[in-house]
Image 1 (cartoon, rainbow, N blue to C red):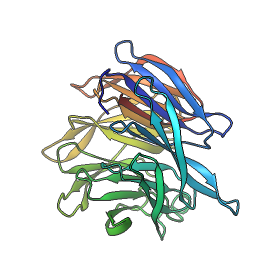
Image 2 (cartoon, one colour):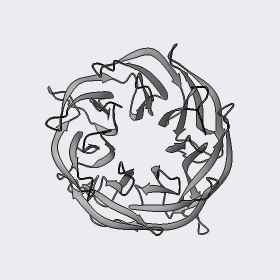
Image 3 (cartoon, rainbow, N blue to C red):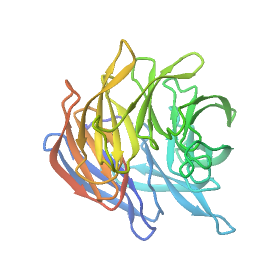
Image 4 (tube, one colour):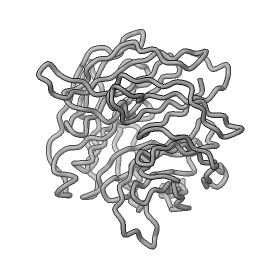
Length: 359
């Protein structure tokens, strides 16, 4: 699939009942900095997290299903993206794991999706068919143990999966165990290669890799911090270099949990979200030391920024504020990393995931 129009679409997932819309397609005008709703789709329960495959014109959404016994299951839905209009057509849906899921990732060859189940404490591997539909359940791995926090870490809580830059490994961030588990996909199975143990009470949630330097950044939900990890490209091993707060140096008395993390395309800046403090923290990355330092912390103009993303150009940051029901557009100064509210936002019910994609 080639991009001839440079049209920037923002695919959005949200909490929703099957009777209401849960998946949205916006167009983002990079000149006027405005989001315009093009399409919306119902029929899925809580399609909170998405994955877009622009090369093959497919969108994948997690959703909730029900087993024959009436128990909640994790399902995934595959959509075809119309290249002319950005409209979605449901191709199929299938069961992924025996519990609800919170995240979906896809390998670079579009042969598999990985789903993580926070409530079920497991990670699942599902095949994709040659035409991009949800295929067979291939494997699932149940995590065991608990962490230091008596309430948040009483059992495993995997929250996301991240592929290594070369695609050989997949890392599962387990908030409940303070561990990042390293798997390989081998003949349709998830093979555990190793794990990285973080400091007690961290609660790793999401992780991203630096675009060129051998580092990764994981945001820790429970103790509001970011851990910088050195990445061994041969073994895939990760080792902690630094842990730094996501909150102001003068402190914050309220409750806070972290959510999303990303890095700028040039690797000079790292961004994370605070829920409670309701802000985006901007870090500068030092390539010589591999460490980060806080540049600024900016109000997110809403409540509970569950997810955010930089646009492909890097000129804008789009944040999904679940509890204030809005998606907010920030302008990014690519020289300094600083972000500024554009004054533009749209209202949508309980947004969770925003994926800006040229299409």
